[in-house]
Length: 234
Image (cartoon, rainbow, N blue to C red):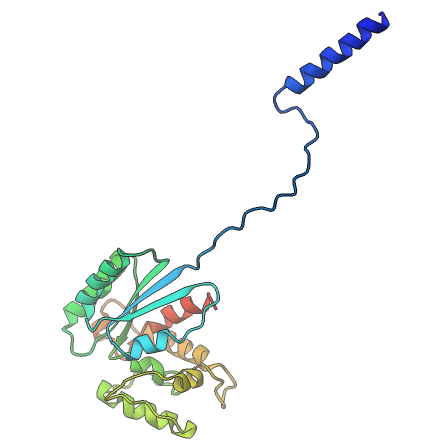
């Protein structure tokens, strides 16, 4: 082959290679930085029956990878679940939880509210009789003996007395920062975190029942399920 023809053939092959799809070729490096990706923390909606106690408790959780929106509605059971649905439709939430008590609510209404929430795939943190029972389990291994909710705050203050703080169960009904810190502290006798103790006690007490009729199952609380979920985001 003549030298001129050989050179022309080489140029022809080079052009054909460039035109082939997916042909490997040198990519010039770029100095442009990738654009930052905006990341929003997931929001966990907690709709509470109580306007003070429960919201003041949940708002004190410090999560690193999620945000808590805890609201006290002053509604109970079925009306609370319905209200949770309205709030949930107004925003974007990773999870929705309903927090309410048995109190003097008729059994059928209480059980129906639990079923309604589960049908909507909401979490349910109920207490029978009241939310303060969850607080008691941090300090006392209460195993189901009947205790009226009107006596809960007296029991709590007896348990808090060694720490020189008190719970105002009649007026403000707030879980203060001091109470919250002690609830999350270490038990002197077992050397175990009180939150872990409360979760274990609540699980054990619940297992004593069939859970087919929560309205009749004293003393129980599923608040531990919500707390365990929140701790995943700490």
